[in-house]
Length: 157
Image 1 (cartoon, one colour):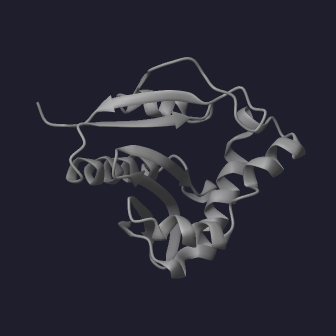
Image 2: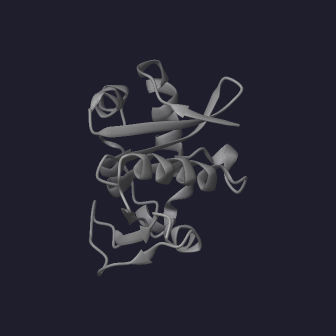
């Protein structure tokens, strides 16, 4: 597996990973409710990805096996991890953990001492296992009860 910066040509594959990850792995969040799922998926398009990757203060990384994108994540120059999606085909293989390490390293390169994110219910225990702690009450998004603000100190002591 290789982790690299995403390019515009990755748009369709990244969208497929993001849509499958949400649809197939995040049932604890969308509760298999088609209305909630459709809202969540509404901006997961190649056009949205292109805009996302072109943001000057955003780093989008992909995990690749051979020619196949198996995960995608993003971190802003301010240390906010805005995305971390893994293909259902690559779940429980350490891909998300490796991608998070790369996102945290990028945040550190950008001068951040802390990363912060909003976790889904599905990913909450995963982020806790990486040392993230909850920093406030859950927030509601897309009619889901999850949305846990979390933070982690990443700078060397």
